[in-house]
Length: 265
Ligand SMILES: [Zn+2]
Ligand SMILES: [Zn+2]
Ligand SMILES: [Zn+2]
Image 1 (cartoon, rainbow, N blue to C red):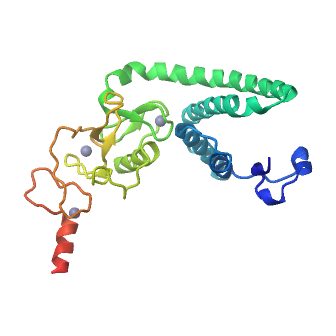
Image 2: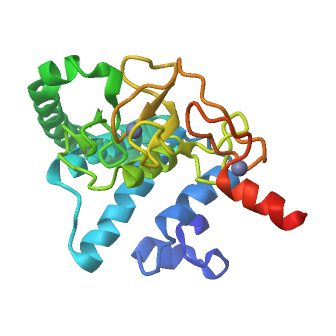
Image 3: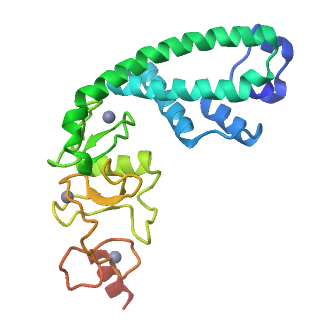
């Protein structure tokens, strides 16, 4: 009970019963559940909750930018996670009266979830036939988490939430970070997760792209031009910088590593 207080040290049962206290933040709540209460939470569910919380803050502070479709899709993921969570972790510990109250609330949530799910299903089926031809260049959208982000044309765009990235490099970074959890400094087999594309020369080549066609495997796909480099031999710089070199190059080092090598002499 203390753990929902912003400051658990000063918590009291009286305050709790009256609802007269400042609650901890959502991130704190998830952290405490995992670290103090030892509850195992699914990574996808936690990510969905945190993303929706960011939306709520964005809504409160600057007016929201994400589209309604993106919010609905993510709300569905969160409600789904919440129902399973309550069922597994909360209901077993309640007495009869509390269970009845919780069940009533969960029925309301289920009804709302059905409404949202119906909307998400409708949109999904509206775009299904278009996407069926594009599975090799379609990935999970970092914005709405639906498998509907289509790479190519120099402007990756999501058919579900309709978000279009003006800059493919930003889409590649968003995808690597939000969907795959990779920062630009991380390494995938010694290489940085997002590389300069040898074809369109934009930094939008994602080394681990789980396209709808490839999943659960990944391919090397440029989100800008939509070129798949999985079967292309791309030489890596020998300077341990984690960069790929342009195709057909004679060089062993990238420009930066060459400069650095000269400076050391
Ligand atoms: Zn989307
Ligand atoms: Zn490209
Ligand atoms: Zn290098």
